[in-house]
Length: 100
Image (cartoon, rainbow, N blue to C red; front, side, top):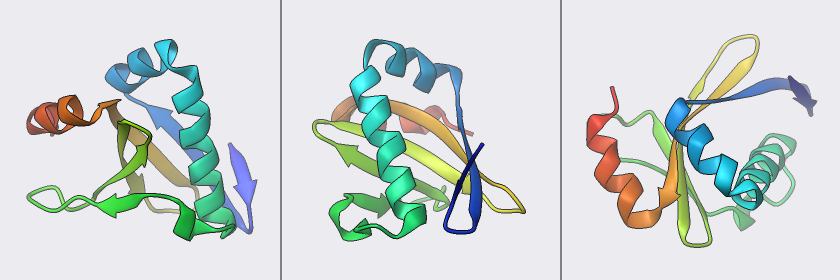
C-alpha cells in the first residue's frame, strides 16, 4: 500500500498482467512510476493515458513505449488500481474482448 498526496492506493495485478511483467520488469517499474506521478500530480501531462471507449468505459490504458497497460480504478477509502492486461499494443486490444 502506498500513500501519495493524501491518497492511499494499492496496485493489484491479474494473472495475465503479472505474467507479462515477470519478463518485463522495466515496464512494470515505468507503469508504477506513472501511477505514482498521476496521484502525486507531478507532471501528469507527460503520461500517455487514455480512457478506453466502448462497453467497458471504466478501463484506462497507459502507453509505455510499444506496450500498453490496461487497468481500472476502484474508488473507496483506498484506491485500488486493478491492472488487467499488459503487452504489445496489438495484442492487448485483441485480448480485451475476453475481459469481463
